[in-house]
Amino acid sequence: MTTYKVLIFDSGNNSLTYVKDLLRNYGYEVIQKPVEHICKETILKEMPHVILTNCFSDEGYKSGLCDILKDDYYIKKIPVIALFNTLDTEDKKKLISMGIDDYICYPFEKIDLIFKIQNQAKLMGLQKQLAMSQKALEENLQIIKKQKRELERDLNLAAKIQEALIPKSFGDIPNCLFNYTFQPSGRVGGDIFDVFMLDDDNVGIYMLDVMGHGVASSMLAVILSETLILDVGRGSPLKRKINEPPYYEIVTPLEVVNYLNERFPFGRYSHYFTIFYMVLNVRTGVMKYVRAGHPAPLLVKGTGEITELDAYGTPVGFEFNERHEEKTICLDSGDHLIIYTDGLMEIKDEKGKPIELDGVVDCIKKETDSVNSNLIMGLNKLIRAQSDFKDDLSIIEMRWTKNNQN
Image (cartoon, rainbow, N blue to C red; front, side, top):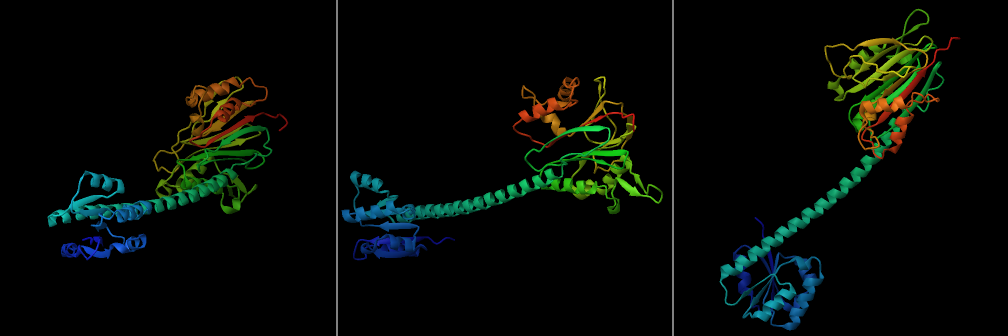
C-alpha cells in the first residue's frame, strides 16, 4: 500500500496540529512546517504528494507561495489544498489564478478533508508514476536509437561485403561477350553470381538468390559464394580430382545442385535459395544447365526469337522426392543468353507499373537490332530511372559467337 506524504504549512500557533494528527490516524506521513519555512528548498527536500495550507489571509504569503508554485518545474506539479474560514467569489478567482488545486472551508467534515487529500495524493502518485514511465520510455528510446544506428552501420558494412563478392569483370572468356548489371536494394540481400573458366574449353556460370533480406540471408549468400569455388584442393563442388589425365573432371550442373541441396537443407539454415547453374563448352556451344526454382533465363536467337530455358527444379533447401532436371542445348553463333533474378520483374515502366516478364521480353526485343549487341540496354535505362529498390537485381547477358579457328 502506498504511503502518501502531506506537507502542512501552518500560519501560526500550530493551528493545524489537529489536522496533522487526523491525517496520521488515517495512515498519512505528515510534516508540519511554519509559514516562515516556506521555500523551494523545503518543498524539494520533502517532495510531498500534497501541500496543505491555511495561510491565505496573508496577501504577502499568497504572492510568495504563488511564485514558488509557478516558477519551479517540479513544485508546480504538487497539488495544493487551501483551508479557509470563509470563501467568496473573489477568493475563488484568486485561487484559480494562483493554480490552487482544491480548497475546503471551515467548519468541515473530517471525511471531506480526507477525501480531498486522498484524491489529490492519488493523482500526484499517478503523475509521478507517469513521469517515471515517460523517463524510462525516453531512455529506452535512446537505447533503441543507438542500437538502430549500430544495426544500420553493421547492415551497411554487410551490404558492402556482399557487393564486394560480385565480380567487377569476367575476364577473357573465349567466344563469349558479357554485359551485366547488379543493383543492390540498399539493404542486405541475397543475390550472388559469378562467371569462371572451369578449364580451357568450359565456362561455368551461376546466379543465385537467397530468399529474404537481412543479415541471415546475406551470411548464407557469402557462405554459398565461398562454397562455389574452383579450388579442387578444398573440395570444390564444381570440379573433382580423378586419377587419370587431366586429373580432374567437371561436375555436372545436376550433381552441383544435388550437392547444394544436401549441404544447405532448410531445416538447418531456415532459408532457401534459387539458383541457375550452367556449364558451356565455349568451343562447341553445347550447354548443360539446371534451374532450381530460379527465374527461367531467356535465350535470344539470332532471328530475334526469344524462348525460356525451362527445366523442372525446386529451390535449394526443400527436400522433395522429385529430382531436379538437367537439360542440354546447343547454342548457335550469335545467340544471347540473359540470366536474371526476380528483382528484375519489380522495376517499373514509364507508367509506374512493374514490368514483369512481358515487359522484360519487350525491352529485349527493342534492342535485338542493336549493332552493339547489348540487349539489356533498355532494361538498364529503366533501372537507372528507379529511385527505390525493394530487392536486389542482377542480370547477366552472354553472347556466344562460333569461332571457326577453335
